[in-house]
Amino acid sequence: MNKKHMDKPDIVAVAKAAGVSISTVSRSFNHPELLKPATRKKIDRAVQKLGYIRNRAAQVMHGRRSGTVGLVVPTIDNAIFAELIQSFSDGLDRHGFTMLIASHGFDLEREYKMLRKLMEHRVDGLALIGLEHSEATYQLIEQQGVPTIAIWNYDDEARLSCVGVQNSEAGRLSARHLLDLGHRDIGLIFPDPAGNDRAYDRLHGALEELRLERIEVPEQWRLEAPYSILEAKRACISLLDHSPRPTAILCGNDIIAQGVLYAAKHCGVRVPEDLSVMGIGDFKGSSEIEPSLSTIRIPAKRIGALSAELITSIVAEHSEKITTTKCDLKVLTRASTSTPSRAPSR
Image (cartoon, rainbow, N blue to C red; front, top):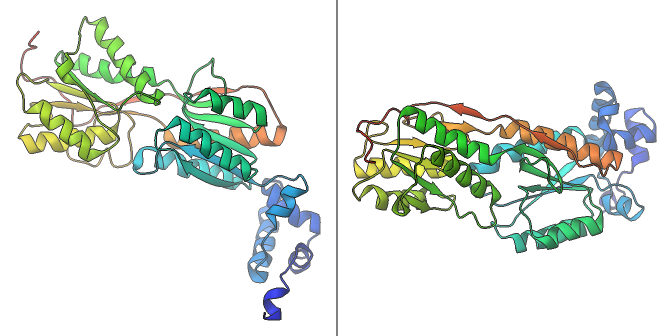
């Protein structure tokens, strides 16, 4: 083997090249926020010039932090968690941590297995989506003592520290928006709520708001669709092809709502003149599609940033205190909703 590749640079060489102490180099990796930007730049230049790579495995063996936080999400197959993941990753990076990500495909048993694998990699902390997890997952977290937070959902009685919104409130606000416009014939298209507390809470929040107006949604107007524009489109076409049809459709998220917009176009149904479409989430692109989508804004970037701050502080302080942070929702009225063009059928 070439000797050049055998003599790998160590932390002493980095310190010498940067003109700083070994402890300062170490601090730049473990607590970069404590150093002046100019000092960090000198060290970064030396690291890049020498091609230095830390031996994380050796650090973990000696009881030091791995510098990693695991994030387990239901899916990375669409835009639902994209802004959240990016914001969370950026926040961790500012504190010198790296994100490891895993997906469980809305399968809580698989989520437990993903958690075990991340723990095997000796992550310093974990972040999960939502507050609905298997009892085995909760037990594992308690047994191993790995700092863990829940992201996206808020509950002041949560078993984990959490940062998020009340999804039942998102459901109520979306239903109230349609009701205030004068809609009474309202259809619902939501994901399967099994193992998905976001969908469950939004659906039941919407139903509760509708019942305040003594509105019961007919079974044929209550459909399920996964987080897929194509599947939502197919489900909605079957609804729009039959009469009577609703004057508005409330969707469990913006992905489904986009599918409904495509279904309406396929069926020759005008939005919003013949059909109002309401989403939840305000995903990237929801304001640019035609017509622009009325929705409930969930502040994904803020949730991600606050979550990164929370998990890094818990790791640093070894805190076992449960902290809950509620973020605000906002109703966004855009072009996909308007007053109904016909009188209510009931």
